[in-house]
Each structure stands twice: as structure tokens, then as C-alpha cells.
Length: 253
Image (cartoon, rainbow, N blue to C red; front, side, top):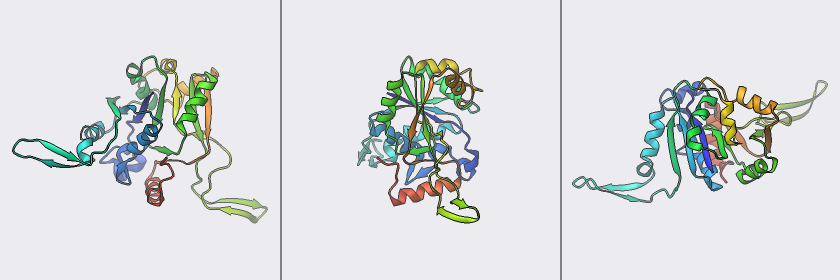
């Protein structure tokens, strides 16, 4: 199944890195976060990627153009120009890179991918969120209800310790637990082709009119994911994900 990856935003809250590279190219464990997301899809057999580019698109294009060289040892014969690779990274992905405009909103970027997806069900997610999501279960859920859009609902970890109070007494203390109430949009969508027609153009935010319209029409369903999920919005988020990678990377399946 085709997978759209939104990788065109400015990443202003990660300016420490994004002044130089786009947010999806910020590294965790020596690989861009975009690569980690793609690995999750590839694990479940979804290897046909369509990357919606914008800010610093050339950085992502250059990464994939030079992927084999960047991820292998090799010998260069300077006389002939021939290159002999060693220990080639054995990925078998197909990656289509599409410049969807520097200033397009998330919905506009999705709309610009319509001609590449055609009349097919596809998957869609952001280029900055990691999860140990079961994509087989997500797809089975989507097919079971027959609606236009499925969004993955997640309960993020609290940014501060959670206190359960009994009057002034602290009945329990949990250091940065997963929130018990309140689901949020965790990305990892499955969409039917008719959804593209709900997007007006470049200035449309995916999270506003299109999804609100789908919800009002009874065409938006939520797949609940109780496992690991974390997005990389800030330097603190990046440092946490790097720390988790060093301890065993809970998003790796």
C-alpha cells in the first residue's frame, strides 16, 4: 500500500537543528527520524513511499539520491570512476520525493499527492512521530468499518509528573506517566481516495476543515493505540528519543 509522509514543515520549535536541515532529517541513533518512521511501515510490508517535501526539500532529496553511498562502505577507482560497494544497506523501498511547496499547509501537501496515489486506499502520517503501532491491526480496523478515514488516537506521556491528590495529601505520584484521559491525533492515518476531494488547496490544514468535514459526515473513525508514541516537536523531545534509542528504542518492532 502507498504511504504518504508529510515532511515539509519548518520545524520552528526545533530551530537548533532546523536552521540547517528539515525536521524529518534530525538524527536519532545515526539515522533521520524519517528513516525510523519508514522502517515501521516497511516492517509491515508497506514500502512504497511518497514524501511530501517543502522546507529544505533538497536535503531530503540528496539523502535518498545518495542513500546507497551514505549507508555502505565502498571503494572508488579514481581512474575509471567505478564504485564498488560493501555492506550495502539491504532496504528495498521505493521512495517518490515530491516538492509540495514551501508554504503549503498539511492538507495542501496531501492534496498535491493525489495524482500519485490515484484511486487507491493509502496510508498517511507525519514526519516526526514514532510509535510501536501494529499497522496490520490498524489496516484491518479501517477495512472493518468501511468509512473514509481512520486516525490513530494516542495518549501521550505527560510532560510533568502526575499527582493524584486527596485534599492536600498526595495519594500517588507518577513521574511522567502516560495520560489516563484524553486522546489526541497521533497520525498514522488510513484514507480512502474520496478524502482528497475534501481538501480545498494549499492553504488547507489537514487537521481542520477536511478532518472536521469527515467527522461531521460520520466518515472519521479512531484506532486506539495504547502503546508507545512520541512526537519530536522540541529539543527536549529529541533528547528523550535519543535517550530511548540508547536504552532499546521502544518503537522498533
